[in-house]
Image (cartoon, rainbow over all chains, first blue to last red; front, side, top):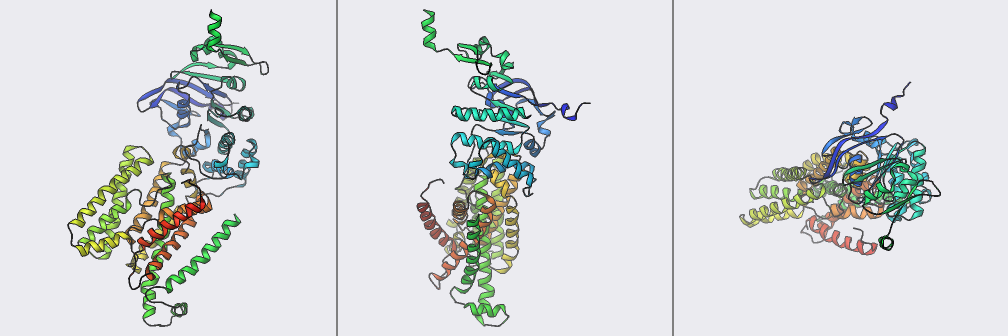
Length: 274
Length: 326
């Protein structure tokens, strides 16, 4: 017998979505179905519309045309608080950062679950504790978020998102300006969450990170979906070169066995062509 | 946490002591023994009348208005995500000033002046609200349209002044400075209770305000609706309008108090709102008492005292804290 859940196996469904800012169209006729349990990475050149895609999914901008469904029904039909329970978003940067402690910041993630004026329950406290533990911030729980390093702050943002919701997490370039230790730490956390059933949707700049960790790659070029599929299939050097208008070599990563992309420096090409 | 509880206890004890001191001091000094006598129902002559008809309502008024302005400032600072916001940022005071000046010039009774001031401030809030909704630029459009409206209304007030006899201009000016000398029991009764109820309602939104102060996107992601933000906007505006129409434009309380409290108690509104309310109440009551005793028999309008003391205190506070994270 089919479970009810399976009826809404598609978490997000973009139907012919165009979106942009101030009359300028950035995304054109996007059709995309994101299913439960996916670890999906959006990649592409700067300005291609990756962040706009995240903004459309997270509800920060409304599509100019087309419609966005969350679990089978149009997002406009969802109550704000139910959407907030249904997925959480980690943005590239905070609009405003106030000197709350890490614990209090993570606790804010419980807000949509607590009803307007209800007091915290034991399960809230447990979920907050878990979120902090998963992100390895236990020793920093009492620290003010304004005093964290870039990597720690990103982890705090993820902990906040986890406290809010673990089913669907959207992230906009979660590792783009972090050192490799923090990058790998964050990607490992996301991988583990996905293994436990979370749907992860993330913009990544580093294609090799995307290749090593993600099950599905959606490449965006000039506002349209350029290719879409598992990294082993879509990371063909011809496709990658066309995506970025540059010269690349694709080999297998000896450790993970996933495709590994090397950009070829211009001076090498000049020497070889002679 | 224990440090905060300690501070709260001290604040509450200090409030009680300062209320007593404020009741005693003034152009006529009333001893605590006499106050105790009045409480027991004894007749202590003219001092009793002064106490009941003037001191008590005036102290109550200072407490309510100080609390209202501080809470209003706290909410506006969160809503507009601007720590320089104060209760008058969207032009409430200019609207009230225009209404009050109009009423004073026509020599209407005090009650009418209060109503005119209240009407003027609410009309201003409505205008700013409508304009910024139409512009859809978020918080900055609110601040900017508030500034524009303030300028227009200030010019209108000046225009009224330039066409009026000087004694009425003087009365209007005194009102503009913020004066608690005109406090009366009947006024504090209705508007005071409304203010206190609104202040307590605002306490229930402390977690919303925490989230709102992180920004629009953050609030939306957590399901804080625009409706709640509009409600809080009106709560803050109403507190500001009620205060300004009862006692004129008392500056600085709503800016300084939330600021100082935030530095000590942190950004969480669960502490920020109630502590600001109490601290604002004390600050205004002490300022008013100081205005009564500095240069008897004259009374210095409380708005002047809050400006002076608040400004100097704030500067010292900023220098001592030595950090510029305004």
